[in-house]
Image: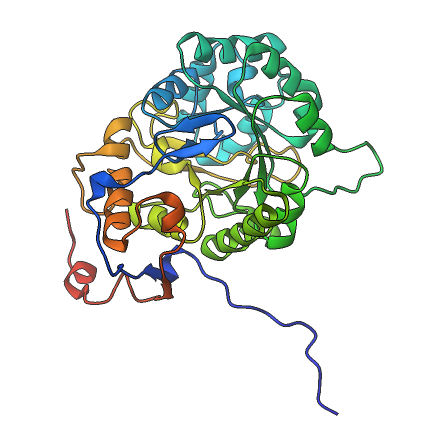
Length: 381
């Protein structure tokens, strides 16, 4: 009798292991459509700024909105706990590594002030910008109505891992269909990384889903609890759920790849894997306008019992507009991200983001090093 395996494992893929195949036709990059629709809102660029305190404050959200994207303000972060948020962030940036986690645990233990939620959202709206705000599932019932009353345009319900079904003895968990009935604005939920979890979340009535568990530059979830799926595979899985949900219900739920994107090449591969938009953290934390001033830290770094995340020094490399639209002053793909996307769409023959979903992908782990002997052996200033 043949011996049975206890478990079967499948091969999964991250950005560095795949490549895109050029199309049979090419298109001028400036004739490609990279817009992103969410509910009744349309954004000229398919990028969301991550709801992390080192990335988004009201001033950054206003700037990002005027450039065509959507920045997400963390309603359970420093902006809603402290009037003097700039001073708190400066303290985090200046604290030695050995003392940082206890400091963050202390800083984030301060209560959230409802007045500050209204003020921060109001400041973004008064500037004529589109406002998105993030809450955790545990904080949604209390904080979402406050944000809604303040005029928030998009609500993001976000945690390390989110499912449509949650088991707890201590409280009645967040019921997403009830939230969708009470909040009129588009609702984004995440994060997840599997077909089945994504499909169940989509069936609750939400408008978009965040894909990614642990790939972020400042996240240590994979090291701490060993959970995650590489982003190319995770995006493909969730995009498959989107297509099934669309076929069964007629509703298109957008897939937003969140985390692990460092360069224009990564961004392009995310769209080919099925993303409708991407959420960026560390690439935008490098902007001059970012509140972290060259530093970036994980959202779960401040957990009182099991911190997950770390502070990283990303540096300040360029104005936000240059990172998004160029012109680039470097050759590594970290600036002019949207120019890279349009060029990739052009050479792959994709006129729109949805057509980018049809671009052929291949397994190519050597794509970044093939023929690059001199780049690998020389120090490039």
